[in-house]
Length: 74
Image 1 (cartoon, rainbow, N blue to C red):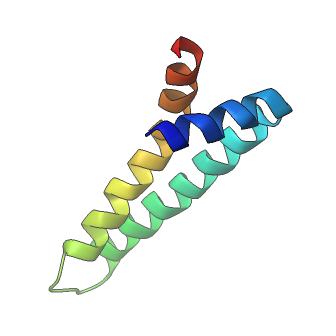
Image 2: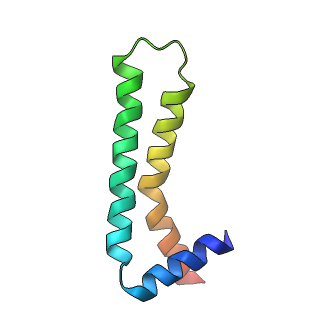
């Protein structure tokens, strides 16, 4: 966790905070849509992969905000 906060601190100091946040959110949205698409539009018997994609997409959507908030408190 310390390494992640260090990376966030470096990104915040460099001024690319907004760009990195929106890129991570965009990737999270694409992964979330891919997981939902696999779950809804395929006849897959194994639902682990779509569930992991949906959870991963949600984490990528929320992670930038949480990491930046933690970096401000540290």
